[in-house]
Length: 301
Length: 308
Image 1 (tube, each protein chain N blue to C red):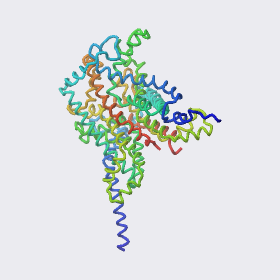
Image 2: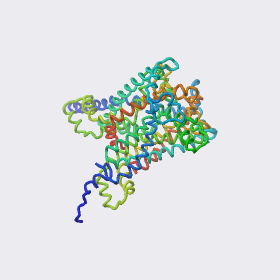
Image 3: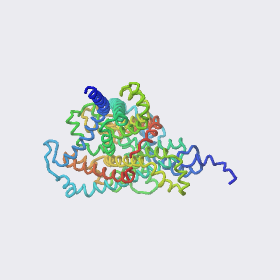
Image 4: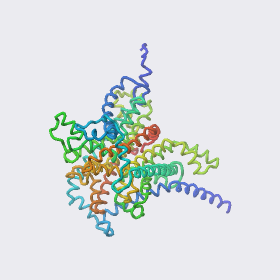
């Protein structure tokens, strides 16, 4: 054919996977995705809108989805409240922040050191241990709540601050993702450092950790979500009110809302929901490109 | 002799040095893994052969728990197992196929719209549980003030407000919708990344080999080239499906769920373990649950594993 297609370049690069720009063939995907994502977004929009509703809008009939006169009243009311046992709400929030921070930092360290060993060190049990961790990807924590409870009781961790953190550190997905990511670092980099007399700790701290930032961001997000949203630990292992988390406090609000507390609790429950949700969203937006680059190493063979 | 032994000793020392370091690096994780995963699984297995009420020490009673579970536990056989299978089959493979198709569609778009869509699709999965219960309880509220009821009433679809979360008829459907809504999690992101990683030359080669439409392309090129991510996604889908089992209790506000309509195996375990203190019996149900997860993962492995 003599006629040179003027769209030749754009056809190759704008159709198929990972296109560079827009192409009419993409319209059908937009037509499908836009209504679907709109529907999926509604509950999220609702969290935002509901939290800022004044009382007359919360209980308006017919109910209105979006807020018309936004107010911070629900938030000020939330923070001026005490729980039934006299603990101020800010205490729960403080606990949650501290626990989440500590869990994320320790989990990153614990998973990445183990992943370094499993990826780059040579030792006999290496394959076996990694295989065990891979099987543990299928582990469903909720299935063993009872034996876990017995162990935590036996270890004297009931009512201890650390019970919030320690079980969260055993995260097979985290170790798996970091290990796969470290696999992509060429051995030569490490060998060169070894020739220069670098210790393992130095290699881990100065070479591996800086090179696996995306994977670190990913486990940080996964741990963050697990720790921040965790109400079960407070319910099952903590009797001391002042050691419980914000997620737990929110769960007490919703559990009672089925009954008599529905009028008093709605506004503050909505405000608390938004406080629960927002940090998840912000952190994921900040780190999403790192997460995607980790996920490309996530294959399970 | 010394010249022979010395290098040997050196080799041994170096070996010890390296292995020692490896185990040192592994040990914090290994310790947590053993304490909170390995031992609990093992203990669940052991307890399942005992009668244990947490007050008296466990008493060995052989297979009695399993036999009771299968032959005498009316609720387990009539509600829990059918519910769990129904829930797992729709949410597991359903959510998984949906996640793959959405990931594939997103991969066909340029980076910026793709990122925005991916963020919207992923964000429900990070709100799991507590934060969302307020939203669902308000949207599906049983009085005329509930958003869904109000909407349906105003269009005359229903004449009376429906007790969505309290009626056995609707609870399961709502559970499935809610869990599907939040099922675009880590597995979805992994599959999206997997599709984007595929070498574009493969598609060009495919079109030369006579692949003419996108569907053939998915079956013959996309899926085979990203089997590892497909398997990872499948395992994540299975785990999150069974892990999501508590949703019925969260939505309806109590265990057991109304007329056991939303009772899944996870709730049954909790019911017997923490409400009736029959820990041995609950452990047997836990073992059944773990075996179910293992079975489904085997199936996924057959489909996408590298041995086949």
